[in-house]
Amino acid sequence: MRKAQLYTFYTPHMVLDKNGKNVSRSPQKPKLLLNFLERHKLSSYINIQGDFLPFSQEDFYLAHTEQYVDSFFAGKKPLAISNNLDWSPQFAESIRYTNASLYHAIRHAVTHPDEICFSPVSGFHHAIPQAGVGYCTFSGQVIASVRLFRELGLRGAYIDLDGHFGNSIEDSRSFVSDLSLAVPRGIGNINPGDNHQKYMSNLRRELGLLRDAILEKRIDYVVFCHGADSHEDDDTRGQCTTEEWLECSSLFYEFVQKIDQKRQKPLPLVLCLFGGYRKDDYNSVLSLHTSDLVTCLNTLCGQQILFEPVVKPRKK
Image 1: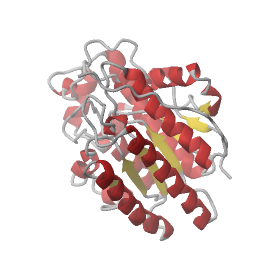
Image 2 (image 1 turned 45 degrees about the horizontal axis):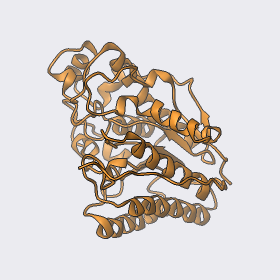
Image 3 (image 1 turned 90 degrees about the vertical axis):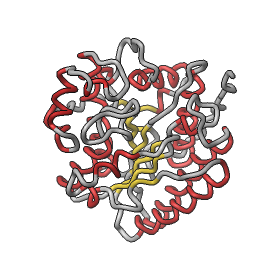
Image 4 (image 1 turned 30 degrees about the horizontal axis):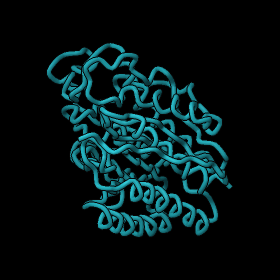
């Protein structure tokens, strides 16, 4: 039986106080979501694990060139703003914690598989070894999984339901020699294609392949990244209606439930946020993320939480 809360690797150091001119609100999303959960009386289901250490500058060399890493932390343009976000010393410091959050969440999940871990982060899956790309600064997935493979010999899979293909893992394979051992090709970076029911069909097919890999002990942990920008009313115009987006959550958590039953033990599981962009109504983004967390808690943790997401149509 899984524990009844989400073990959440969060510290205020992860959050940018002022968003400046940034179009993306991702640097503030962890705090915005936790505040949203509190307003909806759901914070009791969040067990904060906030005493983890940040990454050092050298930790980022694992997945990136020294030129890029050093330029970013020194605020040296153009590389320091290659992620399309304003640079500041506080933003650079927050990046150390967001990337460390994912690593520590996975590390905790594999040593305590009955505890579902939550890393409320985004801004990872477009970065490449030489630069940041598309609101993503460093390849947090690559760093976390390669470290865990080198330390514990464990292999992971990412189910990336962000609205945009997560290229970071694939673009890093030639740069990081053992990445394909840590995140196996074909099953380690799942990004369903197409739209609406074809998208759902592709997700079901990918989950079937992942199920076999888990049961054959080729995958040791799973990270679920349900980005809200895969919703059709997102500013980036995603692939799913509200009903389809919510169904993706149900499909995945029911998949994990069945895996747990077949294994007769819980699968190490970590949840992430990833994308979501609504200038007109950011609460719609937070509402979708909250609905995903509630679905997890109800399906896997024995809760009976009532929460109805409110997603407003995007203004023309």
